[in-house]
Image (cartoon, rainbow, N blue to C red; front, side):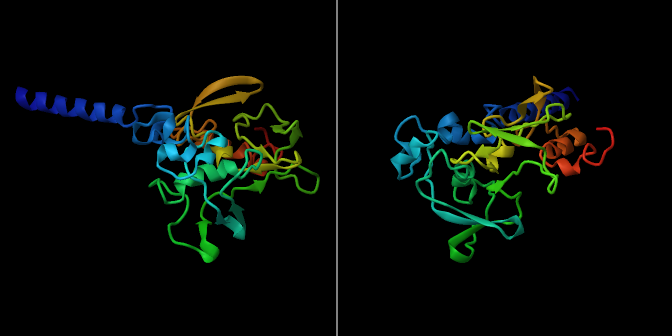
Length: 244
C-alpha cells in the first residue's frame, strides 16, 4: 500500500513539474522557440541570417530575425492585402507580416494561414479576424466603433472608463491619417498570460491568455467578451443605452 502511494506521489510530482516546465519562460510562453528566448524572433546581429534565414536587412526593422516574404493574403469578408520582402517600420502591415513570417505554416505549427496555395500564390486568412483594415473614428453615420483620435502618429481611444479598458494597439500609417488593425493590435507577442490594462487612467495587471493584449481570463467569460467589446463598441450595452 505504501509503495503504491509513493509511486502515485512521484507520478503527481512529475506531472506538476512537467506542467511548470511546459514554458521555461512564462512571459514568452510558446514564443520561446527552441529555448532561444528573444532570439527566437529578434536578432541582435545579422537579421534573419541569425536564425538560418537569408536576408541580413530584415534586422533593420524591429531587429527582426526572420525572413520577410512578398505575398498576398486573402481575408475574412473577401478582402486581401499584399506584403513586400523589404517592409518599413512606417507601414502598419509590418505588424502582421512579422507574425506571418512564422505563422504562415512555414515555421510554426500554430498557423494562421493554410499551407495550400490560393490564386496568385496567396495565403488564406479567411477564417480569422480581419487584419490590415482601417479602424475608423466613430461618426454620426457610422457609430459602430469607439471614437479615436490620431495625434503625432499615435492613435488613442477617447473613452477612458470602459470596464475592460482599451488595450488594443492601433497602428497609424505614414501619412498620419488612418489607424489600422494588425495582428499585434490584439496580441502582445512578449506576454503570454499577463496584460497591463489602463482603466480610468490607472494601469492594472490582469490575467490573460494566448498573448491577448488585454484582460482575457480563460475562467472569466465576461472578461473575454469585454475584451472584444473594447474595440467593438456596437456590441456593448453602452451603445444600446443600458448601464454598462
